[in-house]
Length: 187
Image 1 (cartoon, rainbow, N blue to C red):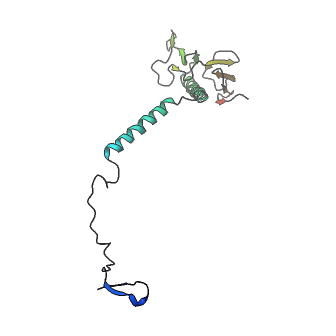
Image 2: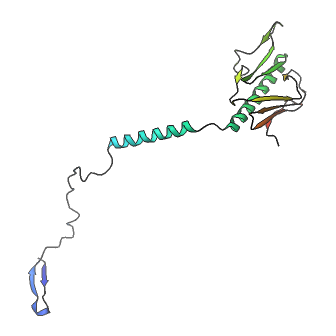
């Protein structure tokens, strides 16, 4: 039994009284409180779903408002044209018939004389050399020296430069005498 000393004034007036028992394990063996709406912690499933819907709407709005970079579109068009010209050059060397590049403001494609000599094959069913639309809006193309771009069976070709421009930016596609193509930015 624990004793509690209560003193008033001096030590002569102290009284010994029984006090509350001290139990060092009393806090450890406490029963968990009953959960009620007032003491509940965490989020409900509905609250989590609402937050996820809001995050989805915001991210969709942000991604739709991002516009593609015009310079990147022009570079992509130039690299795609270089790749297709390389494929046309390989095809012309294998087949032996020259392939001509057809270009307008909407896109580019290729054509060659038909196998029997009547008409032209425009590669409508060819997955690589078919007509392709430009990704850059309002693109202008110029060839230097001014000539038709023809890929023939010869291994040595006349060097040329194809310039692609969207009005603000421009890129050049240069072909060397060995037929190597590269996209370069003007100085």
